[in-house]
Image 1: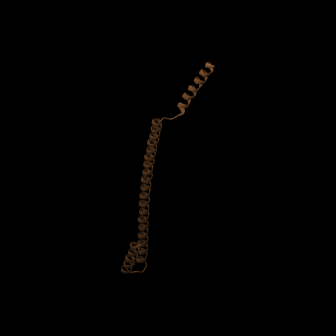
Image 2: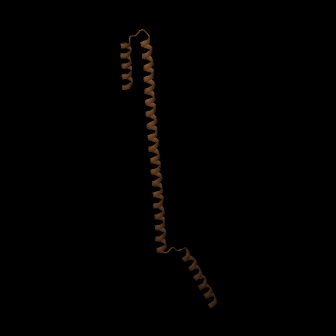
Image 3: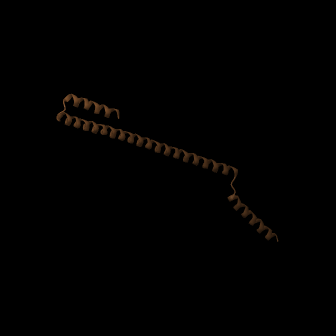
Amino acid sequence: MNETKLNKGNMLVEILEIVELFIETEEQRLLRIQEEEIDALKEAKRLQKELEEVERLQKEEDERNRIENEIKIVESKEWEKKAAQIIIEHLTESNYNKKTGKEFYDYVMNYISNN
């Protein structure tokens, strides 16, 4: 009978040791929570940097598009000015006196500049 009690006691000790392996102490729990918080802060910081990089790239793209649009506008205006100049040259060659052609040229150039 003593041997049976001894075996039961040993089994209980073994079971308690196994259970203790799975039970988290308060200190262990706090350390785990702190590690999780640190990991979360690192992830938040990484995501913030990633967001800042995306915003920077978007600003660069917006600026690039703005410049390209301005270049297109300038090129368009140059084309309009050249077209107006060709029209004026044609008109001045075709029985129009230079004063009328010049006035028409100034009118066209003024129109282009204001649009």
